[in-house]
Length: 497
Image 1 (tube, rainbow, N blue to C red):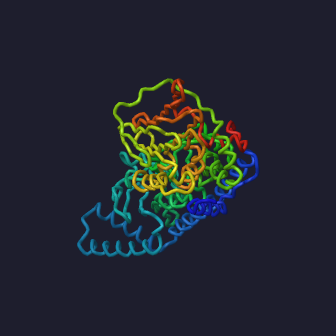
Image 2 (image 1 turned 90 degrees about the horizontal axis):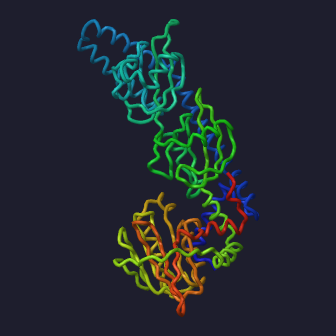
Image 3 (image 1 turned 120 degrees about the vertical axis):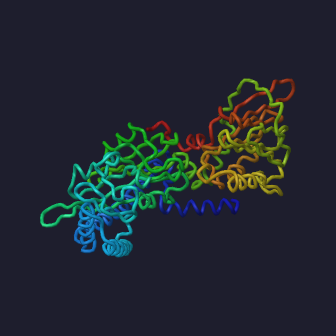
């Protein structure tokens, strides 16, 4: 019988499956094809949302051409600026202009709030007015450093209506795009309405990745290979701050749409669906992706009754290569039975793991936990203790950010198989993928000494053998993950690219 917590987790997976259908047929090829088909649907849905948003913005921008309030304000501000070049404006003129600005602001709030700012630019490139009065207010866009911006280049080279793709705009200190609408009177172009778009509205569309579970995401890439939208998985990958592989991105632009198995910008193997989106003279690449490791774990959970016994049986056959003898740390935090301890720098060590189970949970070279669970623990079935559950809840609530869950590494150590099924259930229930879990096993050993060095991120086991046999030594890093075991069981072809 499944634990209540795992039952709820499987219920959540089922709900997600309504949005991202899973393929439960035997064979890794079917699983991969089903995942690509689901990613295709997500790609189409996001493409539709993006197109609808851009169409609305384009239509709204076009209305400014015939907007009498906007045209009148442009004309008055241009005449006012020309008169100021000849003599200072009288007080009553200043008062009238301020009143007119208030009217314009209310008109903007009621009609054009979807735009971050609106610039009123005359044909010389001078910014007559703007809603937000930023650093480009009352400046010449065609002079100095401002002449190097994408906006200035477009106004000088393409004076007709156009769209200026997203680039970093120093004035706003963030990426911006612009809809440019010419101001024409009696056949003469007087200047432009420049409607500025921030990236936040598009980010809102693309950073919601609930359809793709824990590791899935959808993002846009421009022709310069920059991520145009934010990553929901990497807080450091802000808009236009990350360049992606030229080979990967150019290949996708060339193919227009399709599927690829890639090593992504986080060095994770991912399955991707992609499509090129024409955007008013520009091109963006829309990419939907999910980690292969999550696909495998999800498939395992959805077929738990069939795959769990196969995985447990295979654990005793996982290659367990020896490593050269290591020196036990002389100064370490000792973990006793039925307890766990945490460390940032001092090694962690526990002795006498025989009928018990040692569990290491670490985050790269930053921090680590070591637990020593006895047969009274619930990972063995019924029991009064729940050491792993308590440790995982503490880690998730107080030790890591949600996006760091994917970076945790877990090592289970036991000379037996009695606890591994229960431990794996709790780990996947907490969102740990099978690829993050390794199991070190030596049924011939009497007990094990387990230590983890946080500074190196390395877990080492000394197996104490019976009689006069020398101890065996193993490193966790040399042992395949449980994800690799499940791939072997279901025949998932990990060599495809």
